[in-house]
Length: 81
Image (cartoon, rainbow, N blue to C red; front, side, top):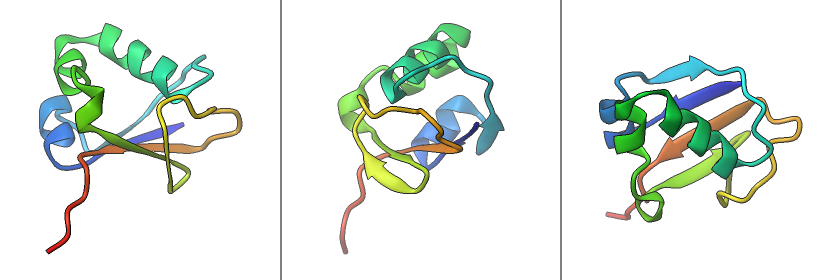
């Protein structure tokens, strides 16, 4: 599955996107797998309240299923202006 990182998440992880092989059943499971990889992921995902997630380009929650998902994107909350 493709995992995309935007804004400061990208800066902390050091990549705009990557292909990930995972056994995660939910977005939260995927986050735990990523955090266990390296310190840079642990830092990027240290405060989930400061993150939003989309699965296959649909905004969702961290408890969302990844069954059949092809893409997960992480980004900070959007603001208007």
